[in-house]
Amino acid sequence: MSLEFLISKIQNNKFLLIGRAGVDIYPDPPGTKTENAKNYVTHLGGSSANMGVQLTKYGGSCSLLTRVSNDALGKFALNQLDHYGVKRNLIKLEDNEARISFAIVESTVEDHQSIIYRHKAADLFLNKNDIENSNIQNYQCILITGTSLAAEPSRSAVLYALELAKEKNIPVIMDIDYRPYTWESADKAKQIYNIASNYCSGIIGNDDEFAVLSGSYQDGLNYAKKKSSNCDLVIYKMGEKGSITYANNEELEKGIFPVKPLKPTGAGDAFMGSLIGALLKNYDIQKAIEIGSAAAAIVVTKVGCAPAMPDLDEVLDFMKSNNIKKGDT
Image 1 (cartoon, one colour):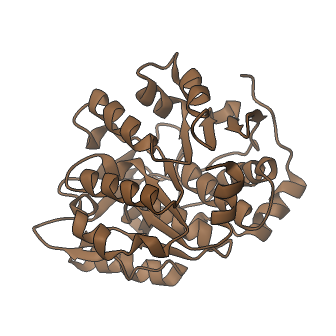
Image 2 (tube, one colour):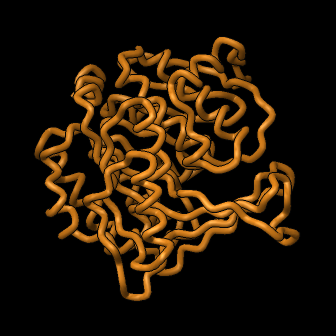
């Protein structure tokens, strides 16, 4: 494959997202610590759901493949997906005392706490039958998040999906999305991520996440660079220092849009969804990275993740009045 082929498949606009949908609650008003809260607001969460919401706001046709709990919270997530326009006909309700991914997220930066409950997480009950029934061949591009690889049976199901995608010549883009509390060990994560990465046309992650794939923080950037020899798009994010993208045998360094954040969460989901959305809208890779960075900056200034995702007009307006700042790498 090539970057041009990957972009052409993106522009065919039929996306399958594999990963989790969840429920996030936020102490209200913003700035309230969880232990002091008397009121909360509730929103859709989960990295794949958030990405689907963001990409849908660029006109993306997105179907989410996952499982949610067969209870009121699972059905809340389904209703929210309907609200945002993310297709959920592939989602199964999971019994077996499964619970949807649930997070309490503070709208604070100083001493921020996100408390995430993943015991018997419904999305990790995704299985090979779900993959078979999804008719992968009907999609043009598959987006996966690394949390779907963290435990069985979801791990084997997603790896099976990657095998089928390769057979069908369907590109896969992976957001590493490493959450250590869902894995047996960092070594196991390294092993599975490296297997999955061999099927991917695109890999996006931050410096801490590439450290898991490479085995050390010092080797993460070099790993990303080497990976680009057989991967069409590799993006190595460095927080306030910006990002380095490897594509078409080029190395592109980009900064960030400085903002005063309300919270530290949601930026990665906004970046990936907006990057792909911008490529869908026929922006070149350099501009798409800037659009992704702008969307990430916007999201951290608002409460919530899914409801904070901007549309393209909001992003472009933001970019007109804010300058990108190159980080010191």
